[in-house]
Image (cartoon, rainbow, N blue to C red; front, side, top):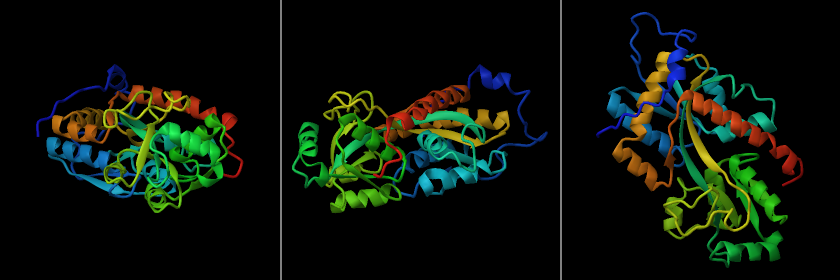
Length: 325
């Protein structure tokens, strides 16, 4: 595997070396396997993290052990990482939307997403897609919108869980269209996929990563994407904004660690993680999932969090979050 190293750590990282914890004198890092926590069950949205981790492990000849810690809209994994020793041997593929939704809508988290983690790299983004059961008598968004308007009580939307990103996109879609359909929250992506496949629900906002095979097999029908522009994997699908629904969102992946990581560790991961995901072979496989690689400095990731926190803090005023689904 040939790697293309791209250093994006930025001047701010180097300038802060004197103010952050450092490794013990003479200590090599890493000198034992590193756990990479992924807050999803195997075989779905954990694919991206596993691809990059495998690529980085091959490039550095160091052991990276992927550990799946699903549950509670990623909060179980987040709590585990927030409480880990900041020695560089527990890293985390976080989804900022889940961080921020818990902070904004629950307010009683046992961790602070903005204070209890070390920001390393804004890794990648993937679109959410409006999926429907293929037995629904619609073939495109326009037909679905008309059917939903005429039969709102016949259409049940699912979501990955209460106030998950999938749930909030559905709520935003409901607010923008003004159609009072019901939203059924499930305990994760897989149960909601099963509900859509069985016809228990008729629609779902789901990411492209775990649903590609269902789409290829004709078991799910995508009608639109939530990104600002059309995606290469499904060029014929309009964006929601194109069809007059002002909802733009995507699934973001970021690399973080516990608060207080030494700058040497941050630099090591920022540099090698970025190089691994830009390896031509790895990058091609990522793009096949309709995922866009980003890469950033720690400071840029922190700025992205700040901007998106402000956006999410506006949702309680615009969405009917206290009402029944």
